[in-house]
Structures are given as structure tokens and as C-alpha cells.
Image (cartoon, rainbow, N blue to C red; front, side):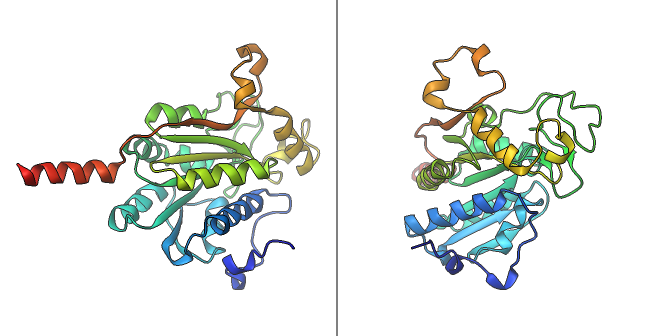
Length: 273
């Protein structure tokens, strides 16, 4: 029997506005399967987004949702978690939303280790606003703002998250749906700031500008499959062998007191003194 997604959707807001071939729907369905498998209460689950294609997701799912301003999803989510720590709070954000205008918030959310789950929908481009290059657009790739190729080198979102203090960091792709389900589930259950980067495909505003590599959205998905290397294997390879590829799986996990626990501890010590 197929999975019934409708119980978690605001069907009155469908059909969605994502383009044919967009992989955002794949990630949304993975998240809904995780909600179901973990038995999360819809009224005690909050989904927060900023601005961008991925950030339209809260409009389609039937939870407590908040569609905020560009790059500011994490501060809003932090406020929710501080006010109602018993809630499960999940943030969905595109690569531009999370790592460009929201980059400073991303770093400090990692540093604070507040108990949130951030899913980064990384399609390497600003898909909604015209196809501009983003912090994760690969070197040499074409976009509306890099017509001669991108001179910059892409952010490694996972490495940035680990360096900034996130206690759970994972990476998967829109092709590897079973792995995605597993990692998002682990992230939601982890106590602390969790980051799941999902490498995706945007054919409309990225693939068609790089037709020398991608003739269709399926070419983009197969490219994600080809370049993904499980973390256990990747760490046995030489840097030269990993050029143009990326680690997938659970990159890092550690236990560390979260922001709320630290605040409660400090308040308790102050009251005792």
C-alpha cells in the first residue's frame, strides 16, 4: 500500500508552484515520512522557512508553520524553541537563504547548539529570483549572474556547520531517498543543532544554463548519484580521488549541552548564589 501523504498536507493549497523536474517535492515527502515514522504530533511540530523555492514548503504541510523573511528563518525558529522548548522545530531553507543572507545566523545557530533541525535544500542556485549564483554554485558553472562561468569556489556547508559548532551534520542527495529518510529522522531525534544538507537539482534555472553537462533533470539526478561517495569510503580515499565528488551520510555527531540547558544551568547557579 502506498504512503498516504494527504493527512500531512494542506490540499487546498495544491497544486504546488515547483517546476517540473524540481526535487523539492522529493525532500518534502521524505520529511513527511519521517514525521509519520517517528509519530510526531502535528500540533507540536513547527516548520519554519525564509524566502525561496524551498521556503514555500510550510504552505503545503499541515503543521504549525511560519514563513518568515529572507535569511531569517533560524532566528524565528530560535525564538519559538526558547519560548516553547517542548515543540519539535524544523527549519527548511535553500542554499542562498541559509548560507548567503542567512549565513551569519547559520553560524551562530550552530555555535549556540540550540535544539533545532535545519534541512538545507541545496540546488546550487537562487531558483526563485532569477537563477543567480549562490554560495554553493560550483566553480566554472553558469548562472544568470555568471554568464562566463562562476569564478568563486563553493562553500562546503557541512564543513562550515562542523567548524561553527553544530553537533549533528549530515549530507545526502535527492537521488538517495532512503538515506535521506534515515538522516532526517536521526537529525530530528538528535538533541542539539542538526544540519542535513540535501544536494538537489534545479533544471529550470540551473540545468538549462549548463546544458553542456545536463540535457534534462534526470541527467542532474544521475550526476548527484555519480558524485556521491559514502562517508566511510570517502575517508579512505586520497584528496585527489575525491575531487569533484562529495561525502554523503552522517558526517559528524557529538553530544554537547544545548543552549537552553546552558541557560537553565546559569540561571540555577545564579539563584543558588
